[in-house]
Length: 208
Image (cartoon, rainbow, N blue to C red; front, side):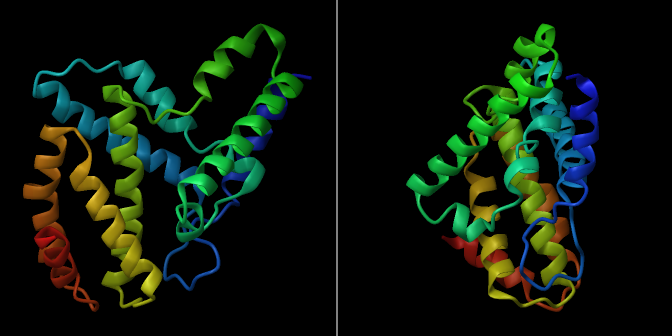
């Protein structure tokens, strides 16, 4: 038993494709997703810090880079399935938590158990860092669906993914970050030429 097993398991994240089972112009894997989430969170943490909030940067980076490691065990479950009911989402979370716990006990050296239990726990909580993780995670879903719609993928799942991600982004309780997203980034998004009418979809969500 040693940290070697953990390090080699990281390769598996590169082979887990997000939004499986649908036609996509661009494939995205979980390892790349985690890196992008860290980048988004870093930017919006800067926005929040400039607005006067204290940011625990160590906690933020640990939350973002580790938030989807448990997908090593169960893969990426389609968004409509995972979020079809609160009960199912909770059950999936418990399965992930249980498998992560067993992995730590079995593969991580005992002297690092406490550290790994802390770093691998559910990161989306009511803290500023937890909210930033939530925003960054949802922003990547937003951009993945945006990229598909822009290139003409009219699959209803990507239209729904875009709508859901946008609604959730606008509802996250990080005023400075949400304001920046809505009034700066979103304006750039809808100004781009796209085959599917992203501007109209966006306006419909904003009107709601």
